[in-house]
Image 1: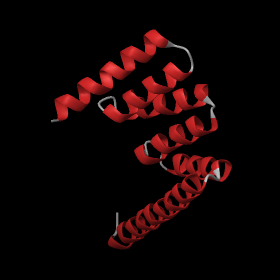
Image 2 (image 1 turned 90 degrees about the vertical axis):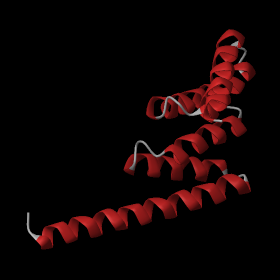
Image 3 (image 1 turned 180 degrees about the vertical axis):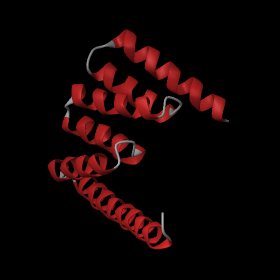
Image 4 (image 1 turned 180 degrees about the horizontal axis):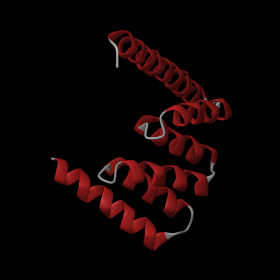
Length: 122
């Protein structure tokens, strides 16, 4: 690989990172303004470019939760847990949504896991 190829690859990766950060910023602004459909579209764009983007996966779950679409929120938090199984907030949030969805046993398991991971971090 030539130095020109390495430089162009680095430049591409840097531009991609900046684009993802910009889209994520816009998605977060949309979510905070209550424009949930726009936020979801933007989170999906981030996830398409970076499937393991933890912030996009977390906020996609929160957005679905705000919309009352609990099954979609549960799936989004589950996707985040697949990426980062030691994320206490993802487990805890999924537990809260499971509770709202009437899945009490699973909710308690997830909430306890989130709390255990949180305490383990301390």
